[in-house]
Amino acid sequence: MKKLLQNFGIIILTLVLLAGVMSVLHAGEEKPKDVGINTLVSYVIEDKVEKVEVEKDTILVTVKDVDTVDMEERGKQLKIKKEFGQSFTELMENVGVSGEKLQALDIRIKEDPVWKTILIGMAPFLFPFLIIGVFLYFMTRQVQGANSKAMGFGASSAKQAKTDEKSKKTFKDVAGAYEAKEELEEVVDFLKHPQKFTDMGAKIPRGVLLMGSPGTGKTLLAKAVAGEAQVPFFHISGSEFVEMFVGVGASRVRDLFNKAKKAAPAIVFIDEIDAVGRKRGAGLGGSHDEREQTLNQILVEMDGFDPNVGIIVIAATNRPDVLDKALLRPGRFDRRVVIALPDIKEREEILGVHVKNKPLAKEVSVKSLAERTPGFSGADLENLLNEAAILAVRKKSKTITEEMVRESVDKVLLGPEKKSRLMTEEDKEMTAYHEAGHAIVGHFLENCDPVRKVSIIGRGMAGGYTLSMPDKDRHYRRLVEFKDDMAMMMGGYVAEEMQYGRDRLTTGPSSDLKKATQLAKKMVMQYGMSEELGPRVYGDNEELIFLAQEIHDKKNYSEKTAEIIDREINELLKNAKKEAERILTKHKDETERLVKKLLEVETVEQEEFNAIMEGKGVEKK
Image (tube, rainbow, N blue to C red; front, side, top):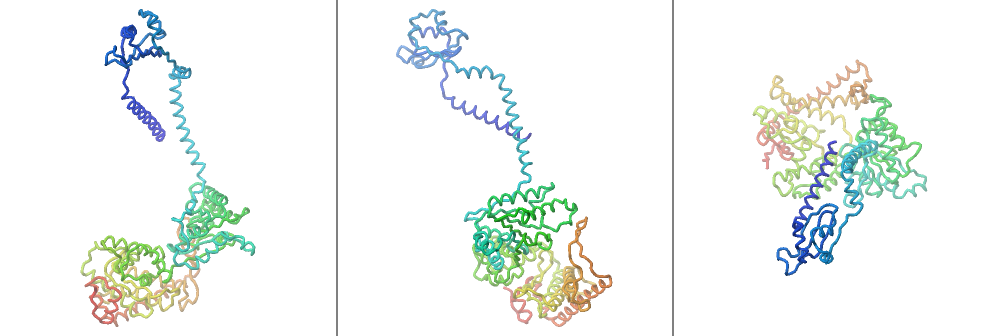
């Protein structure tokens, strides 16, 4: 109704504007002068009339432009009203104008067309019907719009990717991910030259599942496949299938594949497929659950009675463990491409892509930055450089310096600095001893990662932080490394206890104790690193979704074993605490030097930290 009133208002406004324009156009026209019949008679008798136009009850007389006529009246029009139905000749004869004078006049009779006469006669009756008709027209338009939306509710919202050169992505735009690109290049070859594979008896894969951590470039790779293959590319998110109405998701799946069939050969990309592809039978609605019906329709479309020829489905997820087994079997997703976090060489290439349009200072080394960022995904690296560029703008610098890059690494890892929070001298000293405890234990234990930075400036949820990172990428972790890492985690707790005593322990080490306990639990229950329990996994870690949507671990061990597990975890934590005490007792002088420096400058970088450990006095630049 609101839209109807708006439309009606627009019509009225348009008519008013048209009337205004017409009035402006006719404003400059000179109107005929109204005179009486006697004046007309005198002009006719004096032979001053050039022509006479008669239209119904109106007479328009044009005065001659001659010397016998006054200057003010030459060429002007006079308007005279007569009785309706009386002719001009009769009028002139009645007022005594002779026939000779009438014959000398140029008399023209104007008559309206028949249609105009009929329309004028019917106008009083048609106008109300016209208003009602306009009203009904807009009403039906509103209803039709609602019906079309209702009918299109099951239509797929998949969008076709642009194929122009400006927005097109290729494998050249994807840094790193060599194995993934190699797998996907074969998919492109399938689409470009299907005949050579058919001649060999090879079948085109139905689906490719891209698996990897968030930010590793799954969507970017899918776009690159579309750009390389030069075929129609339909992309949609898994969440766009699911609606509150049962059957809508399945309908959208059918519509999506129908679009792809018409454009075949084509690629269908479903991002975050775990939104609809989770294991069936775990929902509240059983087989009638909307999500499960949508999944069933995807399974049928990919490998059912009517196979899709020339359509390759590419899906992306960072949770392959929750996907339904039927979705992963051969014939559905034939290929599974794992996109791992980039190694140091790949990180260097990714950083090289993102620094192209950024003015880096000469001292900034992309290689050293790649060494400093193990575990970073492609999205993390892009965000890191973006934060550095923002910081450069904030500081009104023309280039991005090494200090800005390091600040951005810390910000991405831990969060922004808490500059507004003021710490008391006592809290500041306690934080310095806590972080020094982590740093000293990590430095003097052989299997810990090198300490890159120590700071007592709060970031994120931490009051201070000790940043340690490996020199090279590691794919496996050893038992001795876990033990040293736990000792380093305990370093802050032990340092506080040694300096202030148990009575003055704070809540600061709570996060460290949580991490150490979780690591010890995994060593005992998942990694088989317990001497007493041996090589066995305790707890299957399978997701069991109950009515309250809680996630629990399967308990596949007895209560007696649970006691042994607790005892083993406690033993690992106690040994880690003893090792931290041993290191901090032995290197008490180094601890005091580091605490003094932290209280002085608040942040110590790797070079300065190593100098302090060696007893050298290096001033902070």
